[in-house]
Length: 491
Image (tube, rainbow, N blue to C red):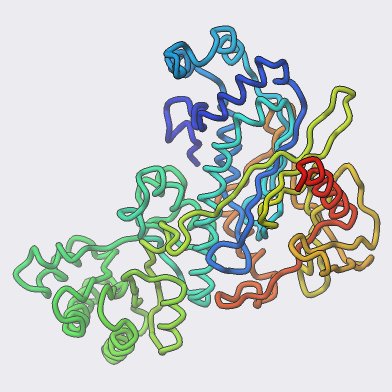
């Protein structure tokens, strides 16, 4: 399996926003660079108006942290930056400090493939505030996008009812980087294969594909095109039948399929890429079955998403494999997850942790203070609720959790419920201690996680709201800090 160093040959340490570097410089100049702090990476709303998200991107995070180091050309570039007085933006002593910088942070994260919900910390970073700050942008970049695409893929795969989904999005993806990350996240989220050959090589994802309309158009007639393709690729004969007349195309595929059988091969199936997919798939199935090709696949593509797939299945479409491209890799109808990275606590001069809170006129944007962990409770039916708690206030049995957006909604967790903490150790004092599992294992984990939740949570329209809340003392701490901050601000 390829690592980031196989994809990107140069340093990625400057994959950050300039304001992270200017804040880092400020911490250094003011003697605050080594002050211990804790940051949490969370998201505020479920994507696609759904009921959940699927955590993804941790393997890339681990590789990024493992390779983190300011290289000479990084520092040379930073030395070239100037302020509005045309003088260097950063002192040479600061650049020398960065040249010797080695990460000493601790990182905890929720493993990839875990079903997660708003306000839960997907990643927690603690250590010198300068180091935590510099990592912010890259971690958001990696986790936001891959979590978004993994979630979209899970929704699409749920819509098919277990039928295979092929990710066909390379040509419509947001650049080379986006295409590779999308192929990885889509596979993690449940897709069976990708058309992206480079993703297959680098990431070990199964690859699938046949021919395009141009192949058919390059011959004098469709039958000759299919015949030629079968001659060249007898073990990959899946024919795109809608270049001219779709049902005539199915008949031509059947004729060539019979020739393949005579030579000891079997036609894989046909692909529909336009038109009334419900009607055409039903009619194509009749033709194939009558001709003795009951096992031939019917692959459908053409700007599919979870909603269109569900509609086609409700119409009785006989599609057996779904090719989903543009609307998957571009996360159609929600282009970003909206993940954030907020300071939760900071050590004072006397070494005591001080919780921090960011206020907002929008309740959803007010951050949660403390050193946060997530505990998932289960009963015999599966997960029943997630409690976000402050590790500075250890949990007891029978804790009560409070809805972060509606404090009147409370739920006491049963003493006999099984539970587990979701954040696991990834990095300790700058050293990676987490072994990233193979992508296939992560994909299986995602499928098992999704299967464990009530179907209402997975519903695309008006999903059930899975209970997630703040432990009662954490809620009280947050409320107190908000009131104190507003009094100080005079609001």
